[in-house]
Structures are given as structure tokens and as C-alpha cells.
Image (tube, rainbow, N blue to C red; front, side, top):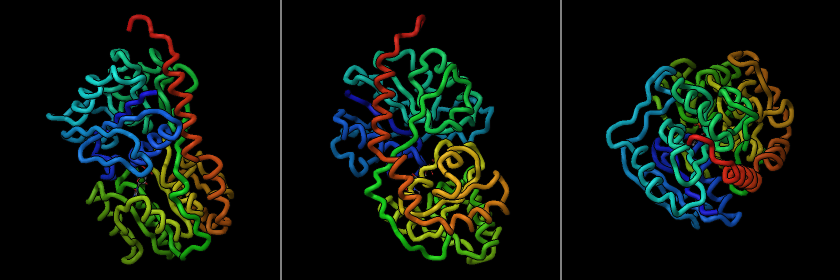
Length: 362
Ligand code: UDP
């Protein structure tokens, strides 16, 4: 297939502002290339093709980033800024669509979803978040009725947020596990990775680290500076160690040194890439039984679970997770989250998209 992958209009590939979508994009593109497809990536400037994606063609467009939906308020209207990157990406995608068999949208945005019945080349969407907006819920529900095959989700928990006509197509996610080195021995430190933003619940991880008197190493883009400072002030000095936003190669080296990764979503996290990345290094994960991480973590196998918002239970989960033999999370990630298996699921999905009969009246 000739595939056009339209990346997120939040930041550019490599900025970290797109969160997990950036790694998902890399995995999807590399996986499709490996299966012999011809892939073009359309993304914000100055994106660079990630490792393993050299055989893809890259088109960049400039423009103003979209505000992230999760920070707009549930009842917010659809916002498209002047000179929006979103508009530039989709103008280019529509102009070039005749050269492709299928278009894949990775952005969580109203405009490409709304475009679904109006393109001449089928337009498929890998939905990257759960429900955070009434306007997005409505357009997703509309497409779920008119073009059910054109939507895919990462996990069942994420998909359950939406009003879908039938069973959701679940594709999970995929990782190039060769890039994550198994580290059999850990330092006596806890880890946390992700965008530093309220929906990621860093304050709970900080509180648990303080309670257990273990240092917490933190990696990620400081998306919300005031929030980062508030979390810092909530625990004794020296509890938190900010280690910056690192590229995957360095992130995995440092992540692999942790005894346990804490993952503390305050929302219905769609997947939780960092959960699997830690496991791939041999690090068990302690998380809340909610969203994607709650589906990925198997108690006693690759990590431990606590009821959402229960910090005391989360601290106990960390102590249980600490005892898990480190080869177990790695083996679990190899079995369930390889890039090649993800690419096969994506290919199956795209075949279903191409086979879907056109909807009457569209
Ligand atoms: N990440 C990274 N470097 C860092 C910290 C995080 O590249 O120093 C990446 C990580 O690999 C993951 C993403 O940030 O792909 C966070 O994605 P996740 O799915 O955990 O959460 P999201 O940000 O999408 O809500």
C-alpha cells in the first residue's frame, strides 16, 4: 500500500510535545516499511524521521500548533488558530491524496475526523486519547456510525469512553524492543516518565516516593511549569530528581536503572507508552487500575495495581512490584508489544478500511 501518515499538529516529531503519539508514529511507520509498504510522513516542521524510518518520505509543513484537547475544557468549542499547522497539514494531505491508497490520521482533532466522508482516498484514524471533549465525542460517534472500520483504538478502556456502533478495533501499540536494553539489576530509586501535566498525576508518584523515602527520577517535557513547581513543593526537598526530556536511547538507559516505575494517570489514559518502555528494560510498573496502564499491568507478572487515587495502596503496590523478577516484565513486553505484531494489526486494520463499502449518502 502507498500510505500517507499525517502526524500530530501538536509540536513536531522529536519535540516531545506530541506525547506518546510521537513514538507511536515512529513504530507505525517503521513497522509498515518493514512489511513492504511505501510510507510518506506528513508532520510539523522541523520534524525528522525517527530511527528505523529512513526509507519513508518526509513532508513538513509549518504553522501554529493546536492547543491540546485535554487542556481545553470538556465543553470547549473546536479551536483552529490563525496559520494553524492543522490546516496546513490537511490542505497538503488533500492536495496529495490521489497518490495514496490510504491516509492515516494520528492527530486527535475534529477537522480530520469531520473530513472522513469527504476524501477521495480512504481516511483512517488511530484515536490517541479517551474522551476529553464533547465536540470530539460527537464527531467520533458520527464516524463510528458512518465509517466504523475507519476508527482504531489502543485499548478497550480507551474505546469504552466513546459511543461506538459495534465492537471497537483495538490495535494496542508496538515497540522496537531491540532499542531497549534489559537491565537485570536496579538502583534503589523509583522512576516516573511522561509529560509533566496535571492529567498525568505526578503529585501522587511524588507523595508515594516521599512516603517510601526513595528518590523519584522524572523524565519528560515540562508542559505545565506551574504544575511542576507545585509538585516539587509538595514533597520534602531532594525527593524529586528532574532528569529532563531524553531521546529514547538515553531514556531507556536511565529508566532501566529504576527498581519500579510509577504510573499515575488521573484520566482514562489511552495506552501508556512509558509503561511498556520500562517493562522492556526489566522494570516492573506500579499503577492505578484504570485506563491503558490498568490493562497492560498484570498483577505480579509485570507490575502491581492499586485502586485509582489510593496513594497508600499505590505505595504497597510499589513494594510488591519491587519483588517481581525483572525478566518477567521484559518477557511480557516481548510477547505482547512487539513492533512487528503491531504492524500486522495495523495492516489488518487498513485492509478492513479499504474493504469497507462506501456509506450511502456520503
Ligand atoms: N518520552 C521521551 N523522553 C522522555 C520522557 C518521555 O521520549 O524523557 C516519551 C516516551 O517515550 C513516551 C512519551 O514520551 O512515548 C509519553 O507517552 P505516554 O503514552 O506515556 O503518555 P502521553 O504523553 O501520550 O499522555
